[in-house]
Image (tube, rainbow, N blue to C red; front, side, top):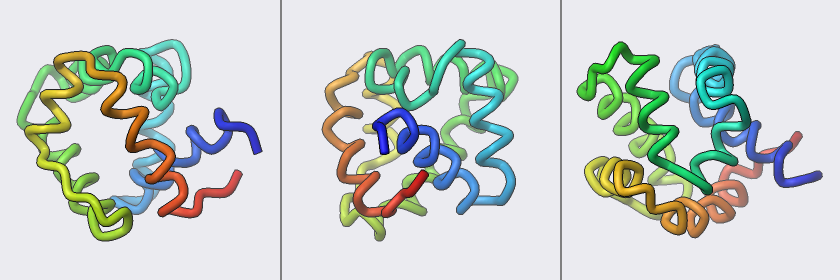
Length: 115
């Protein structure tokens, strides 16, 4: 399976585990705002993903923080890594793509995502 196929499934799977079918809805909203696969964008320009989330959430930073905190709570036990919501948001705002590239493959393996 190619990386792009896995990437799409990681985002949908995470969000659908939060509240089905929000993964599909949010993925399409992010894809529409970004013009391409959100996971591809987060490893290239995480600030763009943060800005798109803000726009989708009507510029409500607390709603974005809540969504990210729910994802972190969901994946932390699965991947054995606990990042703070503040750390993730800081890396998004500071456009630290390396931070997200470093954790992506571990997340994909831990969730055992299949196309």
